[in-house]
Amino acid sequence: MATINQNINLLTDFGFKRFFGTEQYKKNLIHFLNAFLSDHIGPVTDIAYRQTEQLGLSDKEKRLVFDVFCSNQDNDHIIVEMQKASQEFLKNRIIAYTSRIISNSLGRGDRRYNIPTVVSIILVDFSVPELGTEGDFVQHVQLKDDRNNIFSEKIAFLLIDLTKFAARKQFGQLTDDRQKWCYAIKNMWRLEEDDIPEEYDIFHELYEECKLSKLTTMEKQEYEKSVLEYEDVKEAMDYHHRMGRAEGYDEGYEQGIEQGIEQGIEQGIEKGRVEGVCSVIKRMLENNMDMSVIAKVTGLSDDEILAQMRC
Image (tube, helix red, strand yellow):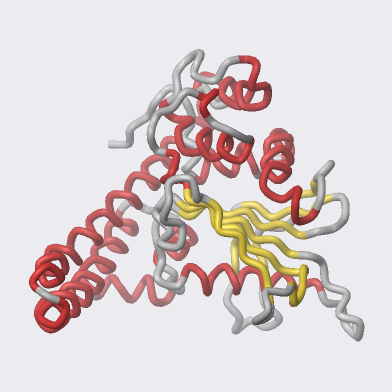
């Protein structure tokens, strides 16, 4: 049974796309982008939403679907993605998404390669190993050479770890707008009246806009389905994680690296991965979850997902 609170969960597809991917609430996205990108592309004064479905140059190329895709007043292209579960090929996916935008921007006969600046922002609801300390929650990646000089400013990636903001805090304890946005996105569903005082302008407005009472009956039904999908994904990934560990990963590691590799780590990871992924996909399909959501979580193609029914 889906857990429905009084506020909309911004980690769900419904919540994130509604408040960051629609014209009605584009002020949220503009403010968010200025918090994270002002040092890279300058102030964002306006945005235009673009088609989130990106096709390849041929029918054989993989179809890509973004959560939010827009361009600013200078025609810089910006992808914003919410990733709820860890993927084995997450970094490859980020590069692929960015590359598709670049390739699709080239016109026939364009010999100057006049490509736009493309920035990919990925918010993740799982720990990022590269971001070890509590205060380190953004990984900013650019193309640089071995002397640490910028090779090109046309591509940039931002990986944002939302798990660093899971603990309840006073909103006034957050030091800048980057932290405020991360905290609001991570915790909006469980915030209460007066948690975000009126003095915090757009964040207080967002809280008021996220009240479930503001939704129509049809929107509530759509949101409830999105919550169920979100909880299924989190529960399935937790199960997959437990399965991998239960086969001896931790035990093998504690007994020694050599013995762990032979008896625990390889067996645990392999069996947990095969059985866990099959179980995850079957449950998603049984709950009529959209194929695009399953593909996003697993990193598999539509054919590979359907093949898991025979696991």
